[in-house]
Image (cartoon, rainbow, N blue to C red; front, side, top):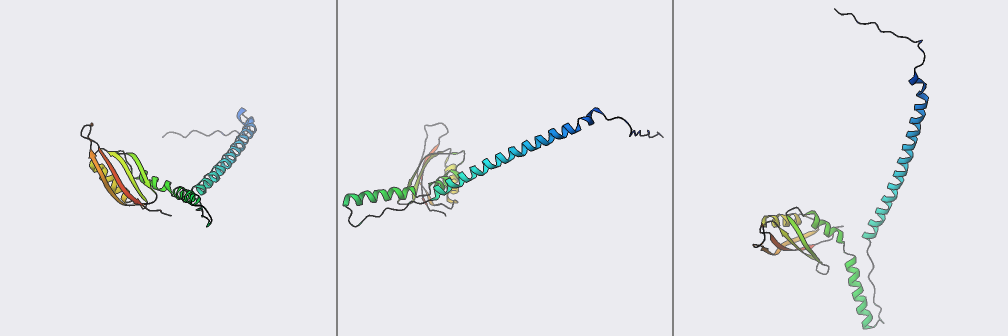
Length: 181
């Protein structure tokens, strides 16, 4: 059997060089920790300011503008201008971001959108695009139909581009959209 070596403990040895620098290292560590804390507070304050800006912008996009009222004594020209202004206000008040988010969320790499033409009066939208094949078009339609904002998605027309490489399908979809609150 081998012997376990004896442990030498010397409590009377003079201080080593590293223990002389311990207070200095402790002070440097405390300063670094204080600087990190100050930096954290500055970043947290900037983040809070950005969050306030974002919520202000969200409120701005969700606001609705009031319609103009035509006075009883207004001239026919003035009434026509008020009617046109109310049409513009109705278009501004439409939640466009929700509609476009729905259309973009359904998209994948097999479908490329060429045009999106919403009609405010009829609450309908025409979506033109190009897909690799007809299966991709039908899958895109299915994804659009599963969105809560779009209803009655139909294939208005399509054409296979035989002259082009890969024979892509150009299509136009028609859908009705509803506002989700």
